[in-house]
Length: 148
Image (cartoon, rainbow, N blue to C red; front, top):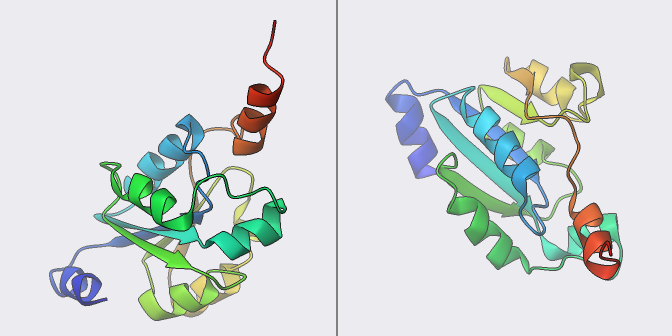
């Protein structure tokens, strides 16, 4: 939080993105690179293990939260990473108040769950990344059933 406050004090704009990032793939990289282009710094919130399990089922996540956070943090587009356990990132948005809340192309500005929170503090929403042609679920299916 101190680094974010320092960035703000220096007039830097903050972007925020979130996701599970289980088995990092090119879609994740393109999403985060596009999110980074929206501001001077990029904060990424990574779902904790329990929330991924609730969203994706008992066999997920493949990688534990600490590993997923470390992989995301290693990407050049990412400045800060936080692991979150809440059902939505609303509490983080209220705390950090990023200038831009970035969501993937599976959303529209009007379907982003946190849109009212972002609007209430004066932020904006950006839909970023390439079409949702990549997914961890698809990768896992391909690993179980390789093409012959």
